[in-house]
Image 1: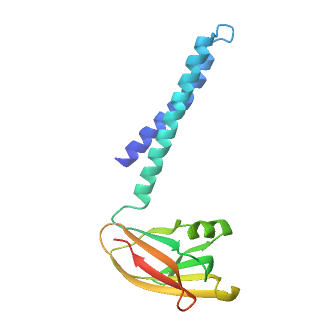
Image 2: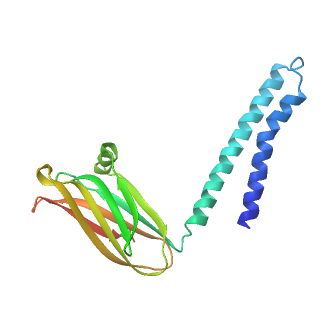
Image 3: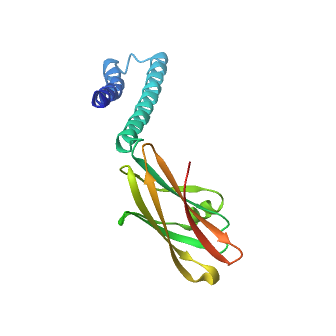
Length: 184
């Protein structure tokens, strides 16, 4: 069914692209009036809208095919305060296999400090028990190189699962804290 829908969308897109060219060939340059140009412009704008709608639909279908909801798992990074840690990069391993490495720019790290959340990785996992290991690299207290890991065992059931890797400041110890938690 999805293949038929994709073929139909592709055929519609091809017709939408070909229609303005055929209309232009049919009209002679001498006989063109302002009303015809206006109508042609409206047709082109309408076709552009259809193409954008088709593109959005194709994107949603692709996401649905690549990451079905029953096996989907997504990992997010968030930061709070950031007084004791400046994030440079994060590395994720699931069941001993490295699945993601991300190097943060100053702008991206600043966005996290302002309350932003970054989706680091999205994957398909089978139902069952899994182990997540996250390695955070950056500058710790007193501008020293800082590399710290956090581990979590989680169970993947039916349905999507969302996991947050949260970096917070522990004022009492003057150290960053790395917590992995599941979203409900």
